Image 1: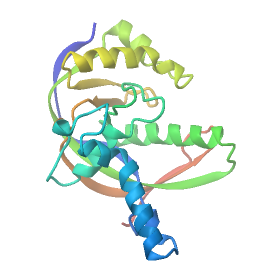
Image 2: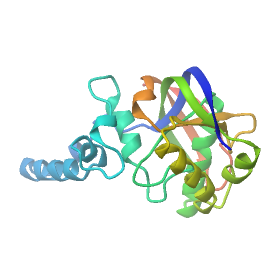
Image 3: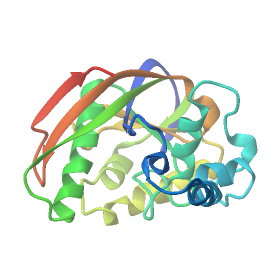
Image 4: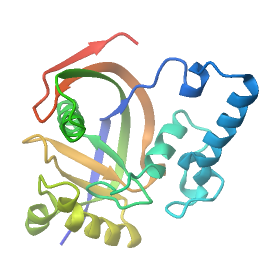
Amino acid sequence: MAYPHPFEYTGTHRLIAAKPSGGSILENLRLPLSVLTALSELDGATNERKVAEKGGSMGIGPGELLYGVPEAHIVNATFNHAGPYGGRFHRPPRGAWYAGIEMETAIAEVSFHKSRFLKNAHITGAHAFHYVDFLADFSGVFHQLDASEREACLQPGPIPDCYAASQALAHKLLYEGSNGIVYPSVRRASGNCIACFRPALVFHPHRGNMYRITVQAGKSMLEFQQVSI
């Protein structure tokens, strides 16, 4: 059975896709100001992070979100954009903050999912994507998996079916008050990850370097390179 264990680490890595330098994509549209204003209002009304910050989310209340600290919007967005099927240790509509303990682990995890996306979209050839490394510190008690749970919860595929056992366990732990789970990476041997259930425990989130990852559909990462911001 998953057991609580102290976990302290400085500088975990979460790679987040870099946005265009202009900020919102709406700013780059050549439309009348009145139309842009209306679209911006619609974007704000349907943005899951903004809805949650106003108390409109079924997954997480505004009292759990971060305010007035650097990169609060990044952390909050992670908990409010859970995806249609969730992830390994979260169900919709509540997300979690995933990070690699090692940089190589974060790269392997992101590369796998981007390569899978290209394959599912029938997009051929090599493609480069830019990511910002968001570093964060953790200090607290997090659950770890026992041997039987590692077998059940860390299946590599098929996605999302392989998430059934891990999501069920995470859901149970979340509502029993768990802070999250530290677990072996599925995509990198000897790598380790954390899935944090509580925004307030993502300490000192800050931006590191920007990287370019080149992947191809259904294949391992082709290239990883630091680039200038």
